[in-house]
Length: 229
Image (cartoon, rainbow, N blue to C red; front, side, top):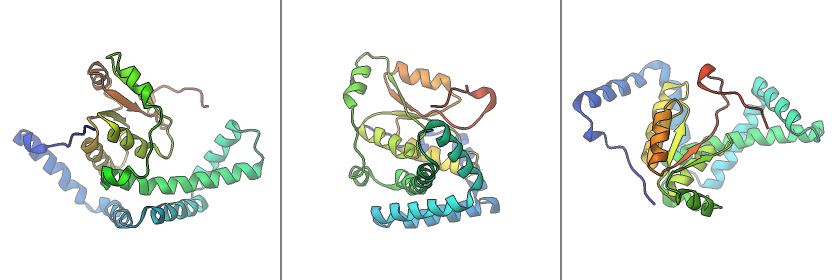
């Protein structure tokens, strides 16, 4: 396995000072709720894995009760994609989905802070021979993934397997965006913004596999709508 941590000690002084100023603004009061939430998740991340997943599923079921808009969107999507299901089966699937969303919250904390040794007990990669065959051509490979609730853990699992670049969509919360970038940079060979096509092409030319999950967010001219399902 090959991984690379980000070493800012090699940055020029101006760059290091810029990062220091950037970090200081995250202590402003508007970020305090985010810090509190992160602290709670970090502490709960010390619990056994099964306990974390049970709590995550409980959080998701609570969110199901209050997230009226998201619940409606999920119901519409499942109705369109799986018309053979009756209303009861669709409702059960939506509730299970919200439970999975809650688990994803705890899994994201594991992705950021847990060691490779700890995570290897919970992940399994299948079909690696196809990736190896693609890389044998010397032109890299794009690992196209659906935007599932397990996407963060999937990206980390690929980085645990070998040198991998990952593409990411910048979150709207600036603090989460910064922490996500730093966390990904610790484990991936390269973290590529979805707006940086040049870095994507450079990675492929370097025969790197690039993990990419199409986003569900409308960014105007920055993306292309494709038929759902």
